[in-house]
Structure formats: structure tokens, C-alpha cells
Image 1 (cartoon, rainbow, N blue to C red):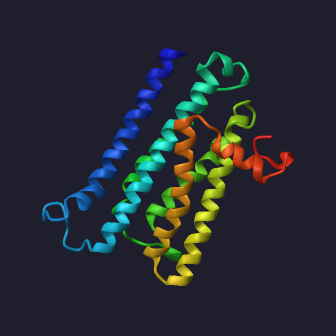
Image 2: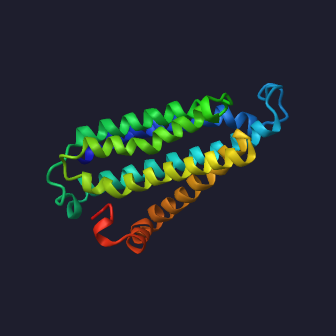
Image 3: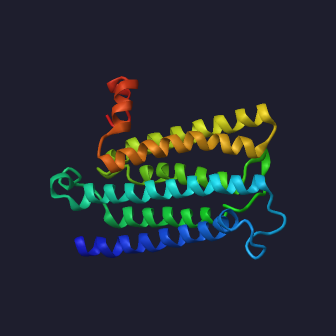
Length: 226
């Protein structure tokens, strides 16, 4: 399993690396080389630059959290002998494929950082793919219902759905107040950014920040991990 997992995560790493490269090429060339006519099209205005900068930060934070989070998940469920025994019914193949599809969605998301088009209700391609990223855990959770790994996915899925909902509320509320789709999008990033910062703290300190928050806010019988 250790050798198989090393090769599997190498595949993940390649896709993640390509997604980060694409994001840096598309948005980074505008942000970091603003004086170069080769890299900065004349129609890229200052509002586009700071929007792309915010998008790049959110993208990098999100892909980092999910990549490290998947490492923690696979280690706990499949590699660590002390914890893996708790998950008797599981499927490495299913989890690997679902994870790979998730990172392919990340790659597609990376192609939208410099896309300033808008769909109905002021939604940008970047926001739509970000929503898909956060809601994808629902797909993973449903696909794992008959496995013990569902228990491990509960809390993360719960928070991803909450973040999606709150960011959507903030976006439409900000859009109604400002009448500006760009400002509304940037305001919605505050919700996502705060969640990602908390997630990074939890990942790097190994302290259950969000788990403790749920225990404080919700009664025990209503907790998603219960």
C-alpha cells in the first residue's frame, strides 16, 4: 500500500503542480509584470489586476488546503496502522479516482483566474468553479455512504457546504448593496479566506480547530461528525 500510495500521490502532485503553474501564468503575468507590454494586455485595467490578485490568493490557499487535507485523509484511513483499522469498509480505488477528478476540476478552475466574463446574476466562471470545488465533497461523501470512510468525510463536507452557502449569501448581499459584481466577488472571498486560514491552522498545528468549534456551537446530537 505504501508504494502504491506514493505513485498515486505523485499523480496528484503533477496535476496540482500544473494547476498552480497555469494560475501563475494566467494571473501572475499580469500581477507581477505590470509594466511589460508582452505580458500585460492593454485592456487589463487596475480593477482586473486586483481582482486577479485576490483570485490567485484564494486559489493557492484552496488548492493547498485540499492537497494537504487529502494527504491527511489517506494517511489516517489507509496508511496509519493505529487509525486505519477503524475503517474496515473502504475502497482505495474509489477514493483515489474521486480525488483525481477533484484535482482535475482544480486545473479547470485555474484556467478562469484571468477570465472576467459574467453569467447570469453576475457570477463569474471563477466563482462557479470555486463553488464546484467546495461542493465536490458532497459527491465524495455520497459515493462513500456504504463505506466507513463516510464518517471521516462528514465534518469536512459539512464545512464546505457552509462556506459555499455563506459566501453565496455575502456575494448576493454585496451585489445588491454595491451594484458591482467585482466588489461583491471580492467581498465573498473574505468568507472563503477566513475558512481556509482556519483550515491551514488546523492542518499545520494538528489542533482540531473546526471540530472544537462545532462542539461549542452545536448540540452533540446535531454535530455532523456524531
